[in-house]
Image (cartoon, rainbow, N blue to C red; front, side, top):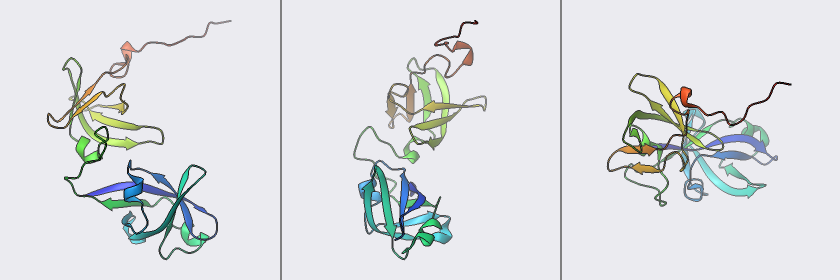
Length: 181
């Protein structure tokens, strides 16, 4: 099975390094020197990582055959894809691969059915579970422990504790309001 593990950003310096937006909780495993990664678009790859280092909080990678800034800049926005055994699970029990979450039933703590996870959206600061409701509409649920306290892979369900307004806008609470002057 293939998993997106990073997206290539801008070129860094003149010797072919690129910044990457990491999309895996295991970068030391998936983005290590020697790793051969498929790409999207596929015409760019596969790419073999030759070096990796952290600079100012960003991961910088260099690839075999990419020796200058022009070649590095041509890789911008390319997705890096690792081949992963479908039976493999992350070491941390609080981490999940996307394929483990897709199609899980979503229920509230009291057992009320919300829908089914159709997609995971990876944003810079948190992930979102895109849940299809029984009526065909979608709801986006932040994938954080306060809102999604339980993932039960054996029961094939995600238990959520939605804040007021997440599932029904009419229940939204207004945190503050401005007074008219």
